[in-house]
Image (cartoon, rainbow, N blue to C red):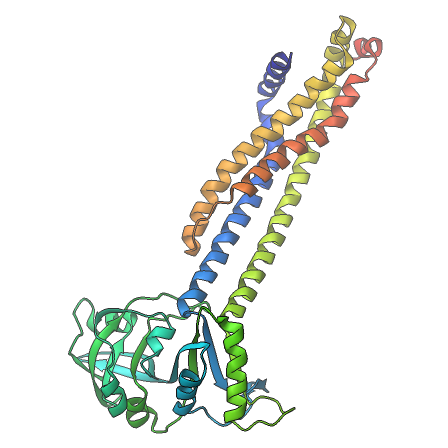
Length: 401
């Protein structure tokens, strides 16, 4: 019974192939749009999460000044290297800490030059940032204490100055200051804000003070919280210690701020997920529009086939069989449209993800939901035309021209 009903429905769809295709177009676009939006959104969320994680392990950033006032940070006493020592030695929740100071400098090698950020660091910096070396060696404790003019190159700087040449043991100039290259950092890619993390030169912070900045100050302290303690506990401990070291009285505002990268990651991924949901919801509206199109065409089909319906009813067909036939036609139209939409979405999301350079992450749940929803649209919007066909009076239908 169901097979014969399905055969009749397919025959009717093939008989008006162009009209059937145009009818399915709303469903195809709706399903494809929903799946594509969600897939690209999931990939974007995954990329942001990976970029945040690449910044460092359980990383906190301590900065002087509490907030931005009229476009600049509120004035506060700078941080000191003794602060990083206190953080490392006095807090069990802190695994590593490194002071840092940066300045844009033109780096020169032979006839090539490149303007980049030269950052003075302590040796814990690589540990906090989860940064490994592609070649060469790290800065030694002796070089740190002596402020030796040695440096590590980011991958972008290496490419700009040396191309495929190995820069190990070569001497470059940081402005007018000669510096020996002792290693190359492993590539990290872009940061969550879109900046190139590989466009950097690292050197001992005392060498930076002596040769580049000319003043002994620490602009940031990068801190890695122990996994056993977590960033919340570490953040609380750091606040208490820094208030004590900076002589901040009870009830007074902090003159420093602590950035928790996990909070930033949570905020950014949450925002991306909300935007993905909103775009998916907007795209789902086209499914409803497609359903209205199916209902409209099915009503036209009932009108066109009034005499055929009358003949079927007159020779003994039951009303529910006529209703089932039109309902199956509507469901077939929406289901086929849904399957075509899925295939279109897979192709579109793959190419869009590649163009945006985000991971292609398929969500089986949303694909199944989109297909079920498309079939449900056929049932819901096909019911009224099917019911109208089943209630036609056979005699009046036979008189219809």
